[in-house]
Length: 322
Image (tube, rainbow, N blue to C red; front, side, top):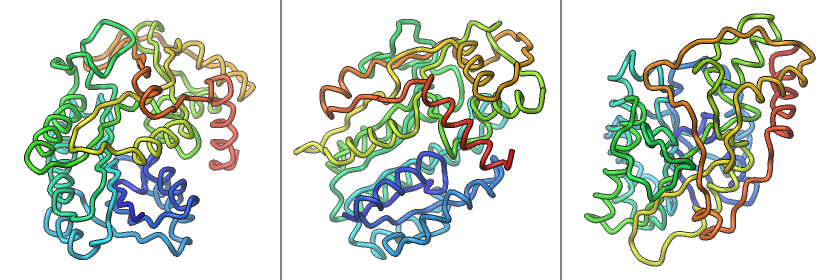
C-alpha cells in the first residue's frame, strides 16, 4: 500500500508513519512545519523517517489547494490517506480563530478534494477530536451522541470537518472514517500539552496552573495505543461507501491531580500547584466510550497512565538532556 499522511512531522502523524514503514508500506508524508510550537521537535521526529527509502517527504500546506490537488496526478499510486494535519490548541483557538478555520476547515476541505481525485483510494481516515463533544454532560462520550454545541473554536472546526466529510461521502462515494482522539500523550508529544507542561514545571520548580480548581479529569491515551487503533481502522474500510465515526481513547477518565502525582514520582520532585477556575472553551471532564471501536476493530488500549507517564518522563529527560 501507499499511504499519504498529512501532518507527518506532528506527534501522531510521525508515529503512524513509523509504524506503517515498519510493516513494509510506502508512505508519502506532507507537513508545513507550522510555528505553533518549536519546529525543531518536528524536524527531530521526521529525521528517522527520511532515512527510510520507502518514505517520501513533501513540504506542503494542506490549505494550498494547487499543490495539494496535484498530488492525485503526481502520485496516482495513493490508495490510503491518513489526514492528521491540523492547527491544535483549544485555548489558542479562541484567541486567534482565523488560523484554525484556515487549517482545520479549508485544509480539511482540500484534503477531501484530493481524496475524491485519487482513483485508487480505498480509505480516507482523518483525525477529529474529543473537543467536538463540547458542552455534552453525559459521560462517557459516545460517537452516537449529538455534538451540536462545541465550546471552543477548535472543537467547532473539527466538527465542521466531520460534516464536510459526510457530504463528500454522499457526493463522491468515499469510504471515510473519522477518529475522535482523546488527550494523546507519550514520547515525542507536543510541548503545549499538559504532560510536557507538567514535566517541565516540576523539573524546574515552577508552578502548575491547575484549572477547574483541581477537579478536571481527562481520558489520557498513550501514543502506542492510538497508533495501533489508527492502523486497525485504516486496514478495515467498509465494503460500500460510508462515513463512520469512532472514539480512540483510554476508556477511563483520570483525575489530573493523580496524573501530576505520577509525574512527581517519576521525576522525584514535588509539584507547585496554583488552583485556577476553568477557562472559556475548556472542558471539565472527558471520557471515551470505545465499545464500538472494540467491537468493529478488535482494538483495546493497553497502556495505563501508571505505565505511560514514566515512559514519557524517561523520553522527556533524554530528549532535553536532563
